[in-house]
Length: 408
Figure (spheres, rainbow, N blue to C red):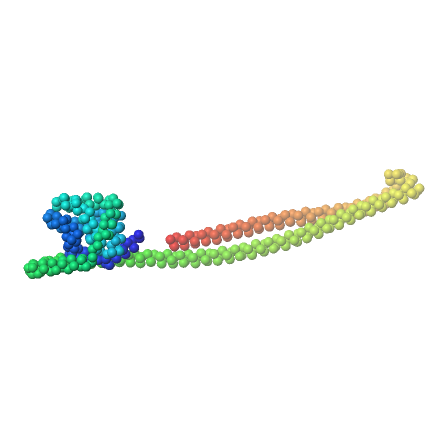
């Protein structure tokens, strides 16, 4: 059972079932219960009642724990649980049923004892007997079968109060007043002591509360300072973040411009290379066509020489001159002029081809330089991105770590 429910049951038993009344007014109600128990013994167990009178054994000497602790002081718990269940169902009168059951089942042993033996029996042997669940069950059956009317208990209660009034009337008023005065003085002293204890506790509580309040104010001041520092750090972190974002935007824009520029250069160079290739191919085609035309022309001249009888005398089959020296000189001059023209044309074409190749090589070198610059630019952009990202990440981690520490 939870503590809250157990405490509620205790409050219910103490106030609603009247158990609290047994502890009030010098246990006056408890003594009334002892008188009722003795009157019930006189009715239900007269021989045991007479034996207790003979040995001067009164009810408060053995039954006080039964009423004040509900049999929990000496008896096993499984038996106590049954008693408390009956108490909650029937009321406090169940204690008389259980007490009479105990006395009735132990009557034979108690009749053989004297005053000391009876007290020892109630203290040691009686609880030991009910460690057996079978004996406890028989006791509870006997207690439930015993019928004790409330009218009879009320009657015994009236007898007790009447007897107490008669004793009070017979007593000397001065002695009664002196006893009452002593009781009041004791109560007054107890109340004064309680008042002093409460005053001391109040002062101690005020001092403790003052200290707690001072500590709380100091903690509040420290937390306010930490909060201000955290806010300032947050503002700095946001400013740093904004600055880094601006730098990142500038870097991105610069990289974009460089990339656009590099792309335009690459396109321009590629178009130049295309033009150079086209020019080279055209020159090659022209050279090939010129060589073919020269071969055809030479072949025609050779064919005409072979067909002409006069020319055949001056030229051999291999095309060499074999006639007169003057004719040879004229022919040599013509041939030399023609060869010189062809050589000049060929030299011009080779020179133009060499220039074209040189321009092509220069274009390729320029393309390689542009590719190298583009690689460097890309590496710088990547390094800038990594540096910006690392700085942003470290600043965010720093801000987050500071905030986490301040929160803790």
